[in-house]
Image 1 (cartoon, rainbow, N blue to C red):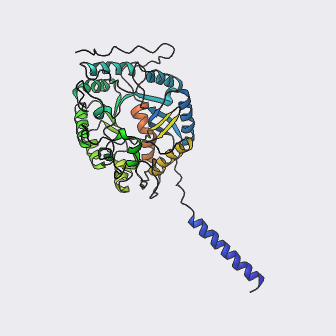
Image 2: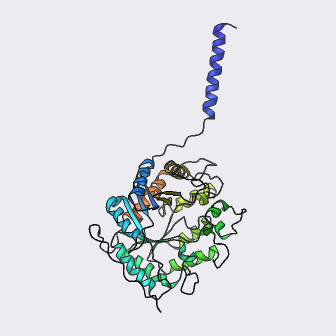
Image 3: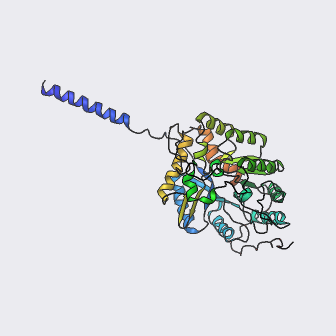
Length: 388
């Protein structure tokens, strides 16, 4: 073989080798014109350092607005600090307040909290969030768990409707948290790090009883807007479809539940998001404090800024691509993979921005709103009497 022929053969082999290497390269995420993103569900400590860190993160991942669901209550340090964040960030930031459970076992507690809510809305709150203490933690004067549909909550729900603010509710938890917290539990990795997340045994009601209570509550208040966080009962999309069909005043967010609804067949999840494209908000449940991060759940190892970037990227990958067998945002929430659902661009715009803008940021309440910074925050109204 001549020198020229050998050179041609070698060159052909090198080209073929290069082509094989190129073909074997990992598939890149498709380019999506994502547009601006609102994270409708954050839990960022309202202090300068965590807020500054969050703003750097949001700039990196394209989040232009965010809504804290941990605004505290009038009279708490968290509420006073949240007002300062609102004053600083203005339209970039909104917040929900929380109830004070102090005095919940006493007569008049619900009316007292309704009055407090009206004053909080006058200082900028766009809603009130009930953590899972509702139904699983709050107890009456006799020590019994207070059900979600207890009449003492009616004054708060009715006042929220009158004020035109949103009631966000965390109902129950994943099904595995109501099963024995043993190594056989599919969420044991989390439960061994957060044992108080187990609601197995004792006097805890079954998960579906909590949802029956929630349905009875919202049925009594058709004029109030409800937001079930964590996509509601995200492990049962058939149940959630029936609930949303029956209650047009109910919305959902995606916070901390991609690992759960990501297990559904692609067609099923895709169809659900298309059907309710005007009623689902993007949220992550990002928690950030002066010395901690929480990316949807607890973690076996410390997490930081770059992990948070990947956390958002994993969310985007699930909603935007058609990639199969990919990591979900929070691996400790089940050691399984998910298949992305590749939502249309118009649906993504609603999910990422338009729905939260309409439901929360552009929402008009029925009382005048003032920025109280520059004067001391108002005193909380007196609590109900602790004596009967």
